[in-house]
Length: 590
Image 1 (cartoon, rainbow, N blue to C red):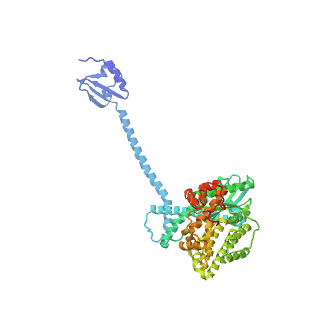
Image 2 (image 1 turned 180 degrees about the horizontal axis):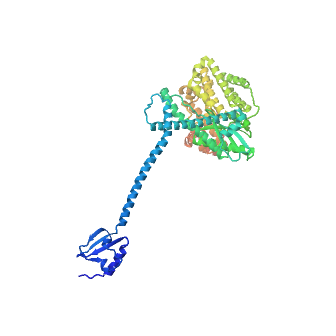
Image 3 (image 1 turned 90 degrees about the horizontal axis):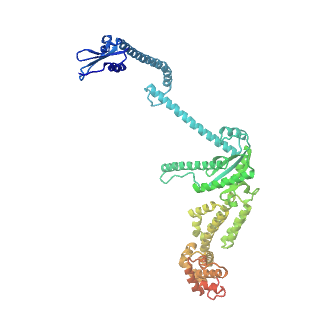
């Protein structure tokens, strides 16, 4: 037997259920109602008042629990509402399908018209016509996009062409009546805020040296040469763009707006523009600083050798041509001025038109002395170069004078049939081409003089040796002069001398033995010792330094030879304050 409290049970079940909506009936094992009849509550829900939904027996208690919805109306309403939602959903789907069909039919009309127009277009040869509409639309769109891109590229190319033509017109001073309008429309400079400000223009011309922008065909044939040319062409194009970009960025660094264009294979012209905020002198200084920085950067990073000519400044577009001509003219005096990197228009001599025919007598006299084996030709050659430097000749005029000198020398040597065979290698083939290239590409007039003197000296020695087959005195004189000029060379020997004068070492030794009654080695040693004695007496240089000055690699060898020839060591010679003329062991004056 179990005693339970019915009232707490009713309270608990009352909190769990809502009598207005649902009911709960609890019965014992005999079917007697425990809840809600036992409570005696007047408002309790009866079993017959609603529709039973669940029945749950409890094996442990022997009770059964029955629950349901009161009078069954709420369940029916819920069912009805659910059916209504299903109907509404189906109606929405149907309406959506109908709308899609309507919209598709309405919008397909323009597409159908567009397809008819596309189909009316003539097709390309070999192109299939049985394609569907979507393929044709896609093909038409691709063609339209491709044509648009091609048009934009062509327009950009046309802008570049018009800019270049405007640049050339400014440099040449043509069609200047529309230059200002074209300059504003094409906008080659970066737009600034002060459009009404006074602007200063200047032209800078960059001349590149030893830069080959076109590559010839290779030895593998035209096709291989074409491939090589294409590869080098892309590299040259990148180099060209790099040079233009560097110069324009450099101008921007110094406050200038730059516009650069190629004028030829080796020249770039740069039009510079700046607001008139500085004086003319300060602007000129800044231009030179910018040019110097550009030279150093390009030579250091790209390995490009160049010379920059700077023209004058102007505020008018019509005078830009004068600045360009001044900068080009400045480059024509590079050799005379001895300038390698930067030449300004202020350095160019004014009204300096020297007739070149005045150099013909000087050239003729020099070649005449050369042919007569007179040493005066060296001084006369030096006089020609000194005169060119004094006259401030243009680079082109200097090269013309040098070509006259070379051609006259070649003609005179060829006329001497008895020696022409020995001189052929100097005036034919690669030797002649190398000589002319070295001279013509020299960066200064002084170096050009040195190269001409060296080559003519080589030809002169060969000429003297070949023309005096019965007399060797001229050859010996040349050898003696060469030794006296190069005795400081530690490598000076009979082999070196024989290669220099195109004779055998044995014959060179014979010449010295016959002319000076001594061997070549003794002649060279006595010459060196004589100069060493002079330096020991008249200078305070160390023995090691004197040894290197007279052609010895170290002081030990020098000291041993000096003692053998003079009789005392170099140190004792200086301590005793001996004089070259007082010593009986000098071997005689040379």
